[in-house]
Amino acid sequence: QVQLVESGGGLVQAGGSLRLSCAASGRTFSSNAMGWFRQAPGKEREFVAAISWSGGSRNYADSVKGRFIISRNNVKNTVTLQMNSLKPEDTAVYYCAGEGSVASKYDYWGQGTQVTVSS
Image (cartoon, rainbow, N blue to C red; front, side):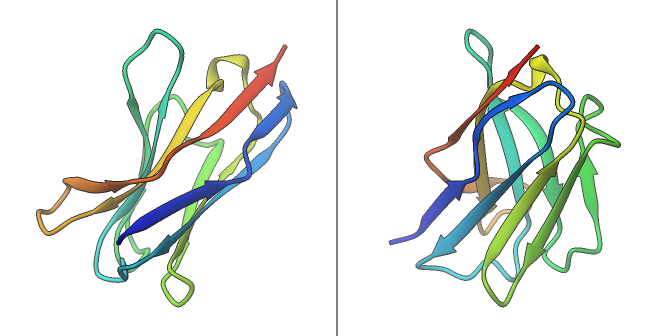
């Protein structure tokens, strides 16, 4: 059974930083892209960041570009999201996702971790 487990969420003041981690088990993602998405209350889930299997290509939503950094460790089967200069509008549940057999289609999802940024 494939599992993605996020950790590192919490409450932080605006301007602060958090580091989210996602540990995968039951399947290696060393040949697949991985990503982070988020969903704020009353809003649809949105893309935050993605990283290619090698780590050589990274993409970010415009809203987080320059503030968030995605990275991965294929030996440990983990992906992280370093979030800096956090804003209240970053408040959301953050989900880790793993690409499946179809490129850019995320078939595997974690349960989410809450990030709350106070003003």
